[in-house]
Image (cartoon, rainbow over all chains, first blue to last red; front, side, top):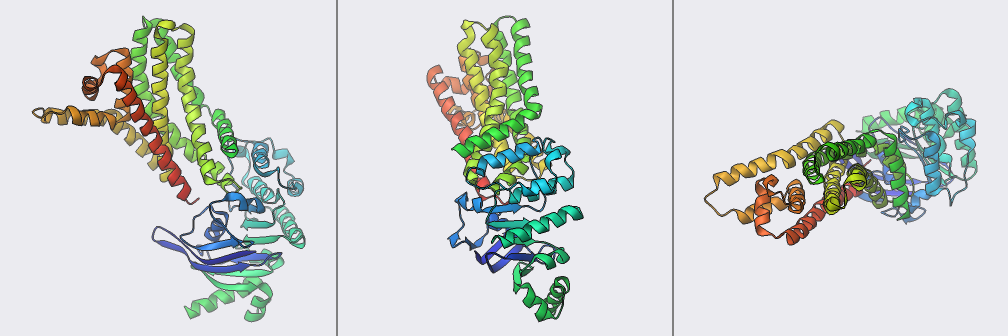
Length: 238
Length: 261
């Protein structure tokens, strides 16, 4: 579904991505993990076209992404921090999104209902709590039943209940055949979710493959330990 | 095109919510009303307003446009993740800035003149509004491009103030010093070029040629009138102002297309 080859990006003199080659398989949950500053968010933003890569190419369903923004109609994206126009209410922001892409999509209000966002819809974004913004952010990603979900630390700032709702939603989308890409630090939740793992280290792919294989390979039962073992091994090699 | 219009509409709603635009329009409304009511005849009111416009519009639009773009950052990031092209997003954002700030000038100055200015000064009042709009496009555009280029709010704000000070104060003073120092040489043509190179000077010349008040022209302005007749001068000034308005808009679009969010 997503093929990335030779992707590089530097901000000034800082090389964030140094040649990322990656294949994300459809119908699975792929976790992008790695230490802070490994390039997870930059990789995701390249996928969305928010960051312009210096070199390399990204193909989604065989089509190379470029200037034409249409491919984003198939993507639901939750950024790391939900940031919305402060002077508008949650409902107005929702209406803007519906206006822009609602016509051609099936609307899925499930997360709005299950995260109990209704009482906050007429509040200006400025006055919403950080957690509510994050809920809104997550709910927007699923609103247009996209084929590809790109979630950048989606449970950060969510209470345990909301985070459980979100995880259920991710799993139910996967069983519906959707492709999910999650960047996260919280390995315990990825244990439940991830089919595949991509370990980024200093802008390169250190491991890409199934989560199960990673567990077997490192002899660890939990993903957290498996990734830590992998990182330690990497460090020795380096 | 449709997306551009939608983006502009959303941005306008957001701008209308914050009170500064209202304050900006009210300022011109109040100034025009007071000058028309107490300033004697409308021609003198026009002359005073010209000075106000030449001074305030560049400063206010530079600052507003810079702040506006930084405040629109969340909105831009939200929309960039949707199937919206960067060109349409920039165009919509720019148009909302241009329409709202120009609206402040058009309503603030135009309305009192329409109501109580009388037919005698209608053409000149329209010229003043036009000058205000032109300056809005020039300096609003510079503000937009600046804010896109410089992410740090405080630095962008400082640079905006610096740009205004250069165009409004330093430029004429520097030319005067230069012209005095080089008074033994023929300076008509260089000074003419110097006028074309500063949008505030251009606007001043274009406006004062219509008001026939060359005493207020400033140093660069008087050389301009010596060179051009009123009619050609206005056309040349208008064309140069249009170029000045287009340049930052194009630069801003270019920066926006390549920017990382």
